[in-house]
Image 1 (tube, rainbow, N blue to C red):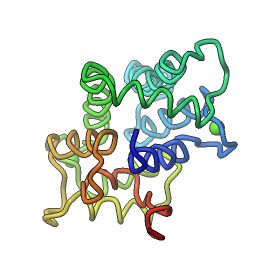
Image 2 (image 1 turned 120 degrees about the horizontal axis):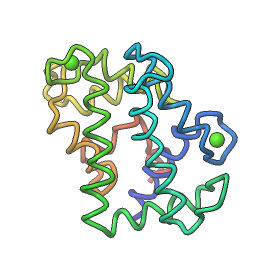
Image 3 (image 1 turned 90 degrees about the vertical axis):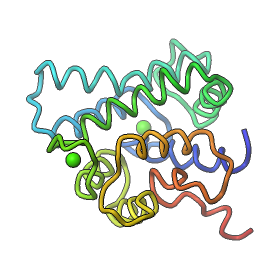
Length: 187
Ligand SMILES: [Ca+2]
Ligand SMILES: [Ca+2]
């Protein structure tokens, strides 16, 4: 993993740590899934709500399995980076896991079902994680670099893939979860 890939993953770990206790546990992912479901007004216990939870909990399952911590109730940053290294090394995982979740999230986000994600839909996504609204606006501006006011499905998938894989400091997808570059700014 390059330094840039690592910095992005440290930031990602932080936005996933919904209860801000420095480790990831199942509840962090349940909380994120519940906020995504809530934003679409899916009823608690409904099949759609359950489907969102199952999709988001794949991250929790994979983070433990790929870092060799299947039985653990917590995932540390070191575990998370070990899991991400396996993802970076595997085209199969990038396609089935990373892009699979991205496709599912796109469908959840596209609340008005017009095939694109508006800024408003993106900001709701952003608020489902531990990110602040201002960072969400910055993220959307960076991702929507032609200032169209929306992201297509392909643009969103490309951004997610770049977030995980790209080592290009100018890649738009680096900004998926907002500013990440506190270490690079001093370089
Ligand atoms: Ca946590
Ligand atoms: Ca839409």
